[in-house]
Amino acid sequence: SWSATVKPIRLPKSNPRANTAVKVASWGYLKGRSGHTPFHLHAGKMTLLSQTDCSTRLSTIGYTWNKRLGCAFNQNKTTLCTGDFGTPFIANSRLYGMFIDIPTYTQECSSSYPYPSLVSYVAPVVPWIQSVISNH
Image (tube, rainbow, N blue to C red; front, side, top):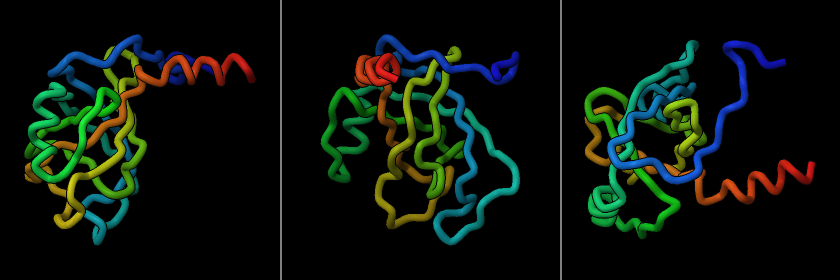
């Protein structure tokens, strides 16, 4: 049942603005694929970058950009890693996106890693989510 601390999340009406601060929390690996999973839930803050900034940073390693994608970054502080896939990006009690990729798996996950984490935005698929919910 719902409570003050457990409640449904709101869905966004549009993609977030550039520089939106988001919260993330996950159980993923602490030091890349060779690391171990934590015993406690880890949380951090990241910033969603502009579409232009994301496209510029990630096109150099072969990503093709569209409005359903975003990226988040907090270099030297918060990073997402293997095992974190699906981590929600939350701001103002809204689910803005889900973590979907770590650019170039050739490097271990590290907060000093120079590329932002890839995000799949929720807003473009909200009509579909609502239709599925209303049919069940």
